[in-house]
Length: 65
Image (cartoon, rainbow, N blue to C red; front, side):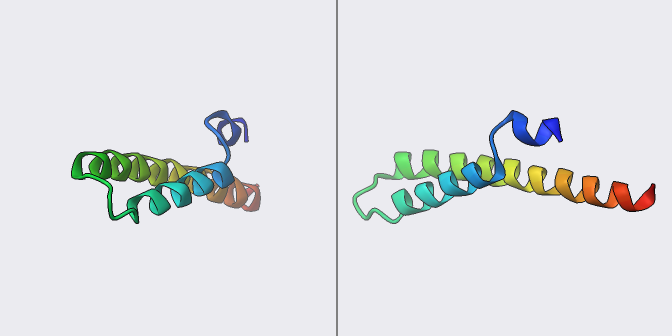
């Protein structure tokens, strides 16, 4: 479970993703900033998925024992 906590919580990543989505909704946002925000969101999503996968493996590992 230590790995799950190491790089921030799943919940904080979801909050950050929601914040980035709100920024992308800004009609005055230029393309360069939009791309930067999108890349950040994509990385956060990847990290959140990884946390979920670790949690899933941890849950099912207990079933195998």
